[in-house]
Length: 301
Image (cartoon, rainbow, N blue to C red):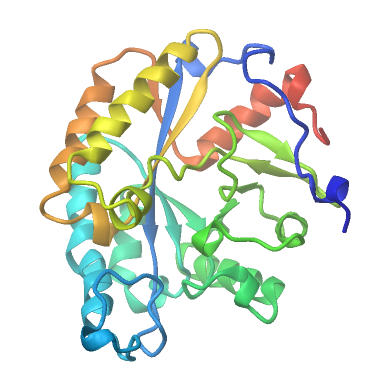
């Protein structure tokens, strides 16, 4: 595959594109993505927070790291949900499909709050490690559809990973948007062989895994960084609306010493006029009705 065929999107400067506006002339659309995953206790953990003593190789079962993760499902999820519900914000949940069967109470609570379910693979395992990624995508979609009664419109690969073929397969399987690409502040069309697939802006900059687990910042960092990012996008959004993603994981942001700063960031953003709290599919619908009509975002570019 040559370099040109690997390119999925036509390059364009956001400051030279035609102006596009969110409903009610809002400057900024904010979506909260809550990543709810299933880890396999028999395998090496998807992430490790606490190394084994004496320099030993990671054991299986890895109880401290598995139970750190499961704290998010038992406690952290509900703590985050309480904050979002208090502020009337509907999250988009990137969901490993087996959560529907293993932790059905969580998924039912999402549906009761009218949160969007975004397909996030089956096991929390990078797609390039799967023997048949199309089969995994289909199994993920079927499991979520059987529990919720609705097929997810969007996809996020575990760890945001893809192969060169993944976008084409997603489009062929009926997915409408993908959140793996973190290269823009506005949605845009990806080039696919058949059909269409829209990239909805996700983030590694405002992602609690990167902030706390990789970069090991102190608890207030998501509030401090979030305000600065919000201010920039809010200012730019006066000319043309922007999208801001905030990516959370229950076992990270749901910790007792961090949850306060999620709520503080919410309160800060809500003090500004012209801010919409959206789900991924609402951003997709805005793209279809407004952005796609702008010259720079014609399908196939």
